[in-house]
Length: 210
Ligand code: AP5
Ligand code: MG
Image (cartoon, rainbow, N blue to C red; front, side):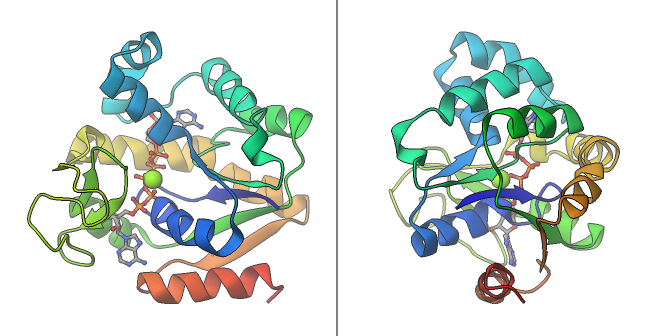
């Protein structure tokens, strides 16, 4: 099954994706995570995108589309994938349709107030990329990942100015994809407001057709 996770910053896409991987046994591909790993490695891609991401803007379509196209050529996606954070523009959605068939686009339905609360308290593992939250889902030991022992940090793009920019970019460039996929008849709305376990149940119900 080829799935897209579509939603505003901080909606819980990465968090649900970790659970969905266990349920569906298909890989989770997050363009944001790929970019962050390139930044950490100080690779040419990382150097190119760092300032853009820290400012909350979008990386250009050409770079992002090429990256995803290459990744989807990997053998591990034969049975499907979860694309988290791609596509984010109509141009990316059209490009994706030219090299892969999407079965469903999961739309994370959540108000701005929850987004700000979630992003304000988010902490991330530098090693495995898992997301935590100082109130909703804290690590057992301060500053240490529960799963891999990696160092916990705050993403540079979770600063208030960058968050505002990301929300604005989402509204202008990404939200139109909701109608794009609704018109194709493959949009699945998921109520992303409740706690993680309930969101997982909402997701399973949506996949099962209601
Ligand atoms: P990306 O990494 O994709 O960031 P994003 O879309 O802004 O989304 P986030 O990762 O911030 O949020 P999320 O929905 O994954 O929420 P999370 O699960 O962490 O992209 C980063 C940047 O890369 C972009 O700004 C852009 O520059 C670039 N980029 C990436 N893709 C691109 C593309 N296609 N084109 C161009 N540029 C691209 O949850 C948030 C917090 O809430 C966590 O603390 C979590 O613990 C908590 N939480 C989650 N679910 C719940 C719940 N149900 N209840 C309570 N707390 C919860
Ligand atoms: Mg994420």
